Length: 183
Image 1 (cartoon, rainbow, N blue to C red):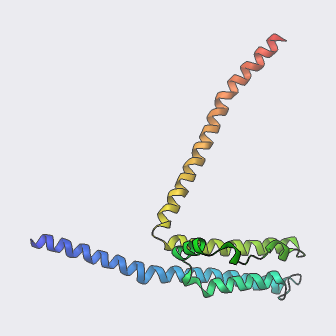
Image 2: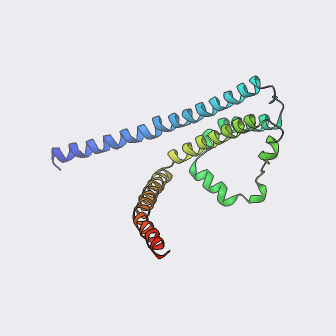
Image 3: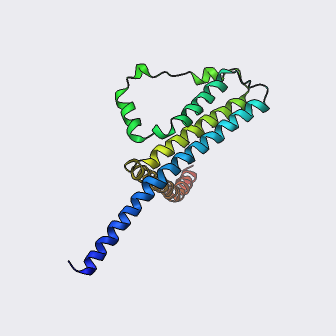
């Protein structure tokens, strides 16, 4: 082995070690902190909504349920991974999953409060989904591939509709003219 080959291998292994350090020592804790920060901000927003609007008391079922959900997401954020989600989805029977009737819980609240609570809940779900997607080396490329396919499909549909209308206009005009001549 020549010195150049040895230096090339050392360079490769040092870059691989650096990538491992960035991924496992820097990136994972950052993702976890970013998720928790987003969830804390949503919990603060929920608290301020209840403090500012007297029609949403702190004892209301919708407030306590959403607050407990956010607290659980914050507490167990490091356990939210693609592999655990997949195992949960595959092996936990559907009968054991406790589902609350969120729409019934929201009933009786003013419409603007309902919309605000639904947005907070949706933002929390999106934050957790992004955390799980960006934490999985398998799910991340699949997600961006499907997203790109969706964009290409939308672009193709838009262009195809424009082409159809471009072709259809002269045909419609010709059909109108023939109808007028026949009348």
